[in-house]
Length: 306
View 1 (cartoon, one colour):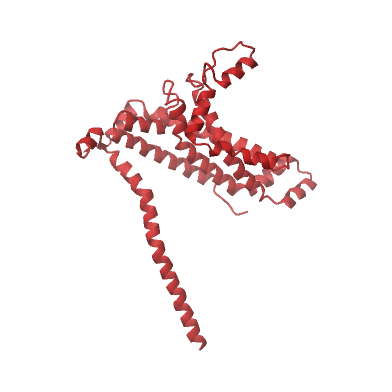
View 2: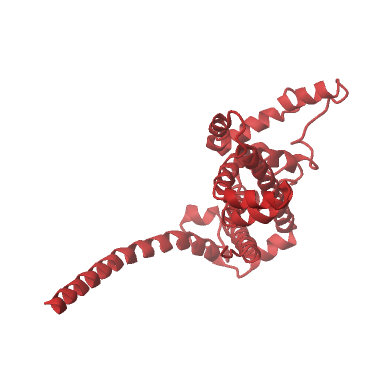
């Protein structure tokens, strides 16, 4: 009798597993196809001379091996855009982590109106990126912008020509400020959630042993937040690698290509120059560079069990 019950349970569990696998396989295939098909298509088209005339005439592109890649390197467009992209990503990611952690520590210290601050600080993150770009474009406007007005007050009228986005040396800084304004709220809340998981008894014990605030932060808080920090920074790297709306809205890649990132260059090659093969080549290099950076980051900050 007992053997019969066990056999019946085994058959039931086996049937449930087979049914679950049968449901999962189509979902996995669909998800993988949804992710890989555009990537493979972009890589494939990057080896073709494929322009708008091919779409209009319905003719396939002409295979040109690595001509799209060699042309991008030879005309001096690709390397500066790669440099701009990496400078923007690393600058914004580091500043976002430092400022986000500082705000998280402040909000975690039972400051007054902390709940209200948490509520309103999400407004920049909720605002669409295009709208954020327009808001900061107006603020940096060299004739009547709010930033220029405050600079004039602080300098008592000594500085009258203050155009951040019109200067190749400061344009990237202006876009970075707009990116930080939008992204810091989410990073702060993620890090704040990580701070809530740090054991209070560990900090109290370290405090009794004579550890100061800096020592407790680096020896206790950061190690316990390692997984949260890893996810937060990874999201920031990916988000800023694919940043397009802010650059296109605020500078269009200028002035003098000082803010031309891989995203801007890919758009220009594909939809301004109408060379879809060249645009696909930029996108392929762009994706490869992002994968390498994320891979290196994950290798350096490989998670370890506490």
